[in-house]
Amino acid sequence: MTSAAAETEVQPLLEVDNVSKTFDIKLGLKRATVYAVGGVSISVQPSSTLGIVGESGCGKSTLARLILGLYPADRGEIRFAGQPLPRRGKRPRAVVEQMQMVFQDPYSALNPRASIGQSIAFPLQVQGMDRAEIRDRVARVLHDVGLHGNYATHYPHQLSGGQRQRVNIARALAMAPRLVVLDEAVSALDKSIQAQILNLLEDLQRAYQLTYIFISHDLNVVEYMSNRVAVMYLGQVVETCAADELYQRPLHPYSQGLLASIPTLDGASTEPTRVTGEMPSPLNPPSGCRFRTRCPFATDTCATHVPVLAEAEPGHLVACHLYPSSQPTTTPTTTQGE
Image (spheres, rainbow, N blue to C red):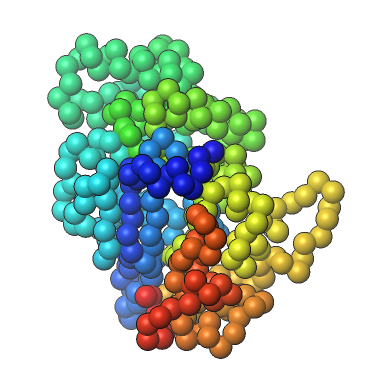
């Protein structure tokens, strides 16, 4: 685990600066706006893993697609290796090749009519690579993810869930990426298979010098995989710090509630700090602090001022009015979706 001081000496591979995304939808005869991601800022150091956690619907997957350019951002900037990326339109091919994704469902992510070899080879063919080199690379990445080269002739329905996810990982590796986004990549697998895939991902990170963004709702898995963790709530990052620091001393009430919800073997009760109630709709997020409707420490200030994600302790950022560093210095903001 690298220290915060050491991390600042190296330029981040990925920087997300105040990125927001909304979606216009139809509700019957009316139109409405979904505030999916609101002003998110994160950074990822080379060859490290940033874990992103939060309840379902908090914007984790939308943020992943914004990073990869699958969705255009409404505002904000994304930089890869110091290079600003366009919010709309095509990204440079060299950047696209270096950013890959592994999706949650290993079966639906594969074309059922294409063999495993064809699925892995397709992006290489698009890049104009010759057949001999494609064949060698397919065999190599299959070997690296723990599958025999003979699997290249198999089809997705002939493989188990764990084998299919290994194929998806191999397909991502075939492009020789620097950044891999793993969106709930082990949540659809049995626990024993999860452990195998997580160990595989660690081995591949060392072998390929990969940088991961690891998205999951499983807090134990995120702790195991991550160097740093960003906690998201209703489209915003509310806390980010080193993984061991978050699990030992969470600062934001939402982070404290998430960690309190982890089942314990001794049956110890942590009810007073658990998060209660349901997450508000992203169609109509609360003014001020979006967590205030579920926070036991909420005050009048929380309803009228948006807390700023700021350093409460060295390397530990939190967006909460309980900490002076998060107090905004600008005019109160009550507009929804900001």
